[in-house]
Image (cartoon, rainbow, N blue to C red; front, side, top):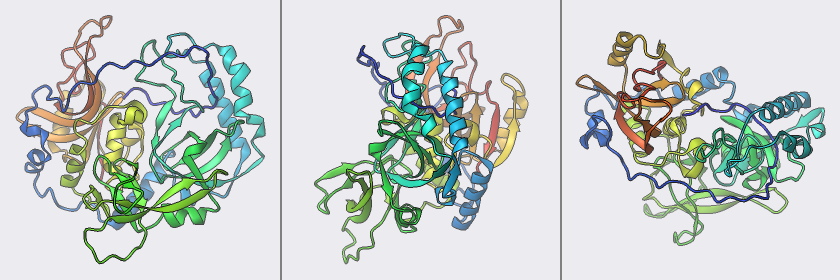
Length: 458
């Protein structure tokens, strides 16, 4: 994954030059790469190689303790229900000022390949961000996402690119939060169309129309913190408005947690009844019953935390689209890892740098060095539980076959040129299984060459 932006910035971008976005066609998947075989495209191939693959690594109580550790260790991971009810406004004011200055000084392009001028920020952004309207003491508001929605560095859906033509890598896109994600609300844009929020694993700007505001934190927790829920354990699951499952509402993705409505039913085939949030015209929250088929890939509890189940969850996303920051309903490398572990009940960080410091550190390395140490570490690593990090990329370790080490990961392209000026690529743009020799015939070196850390999520 390219360098993730930790900035949280704010403005609305307007332009008179509307340019249609054109994306190249997606490769058909799942693609079989390097020395991978068709047999390797099945989770069972890897699970059978693991002794005691179904052994429970952490009990639900131990996972709760692990989640508390993650939140204490990673500043960006927050328990929304433990946030203070008030916050000094100066903290947000300082943050917004810092972020505005940082973005203003970056050289970014629109999808029309024109440089975004600095006077645009000075003339239009500051009034919209309304930094001077942040009160001395912020009284928190509490909301939940009524659908999956983007978290942006600034309050606009217009793309800004680091390089001309790099349309699939919008530098303003942090990530997406899922349906029913609870948020604390700090601030709003002057036009009221955007909210500056803290979500469990990211802070940024989201569209106000996608957030329903609850009357209190306790009222939000009654739903978003309920111990009666469905977790989406497939790539996604359909939610329907009616119990006959004829009126489609939306399709939340893997790891989404939806509170269940306690409705007695004598039928084992009747759909699950769930609560869905909606936003009233005044922005306040309402909830309504909705339905999920029992045939959907959902569960009433998180899967047992085992190596086998982690690998099964990862392979449910095989062939799914790559999407920087969750764009195009896809997943980038850390988004893929995040969803896999989130669906197992782990309050996992969203950014690859944060993911790489969680759990047990097995080794730190310099790119293109310490090959023997890397091999020794991988030979003892536990598949499924082990993450392998390169600069700007994250992967889940599957195991060793012969002399090759294999991973499952979401990746955009394979570089194939030794000349950096040509920088030739084969687009992959999906979740794939590959060995660590991928990219080996290029100037940047193989995945193995560029490993910088290996950690175990235990």
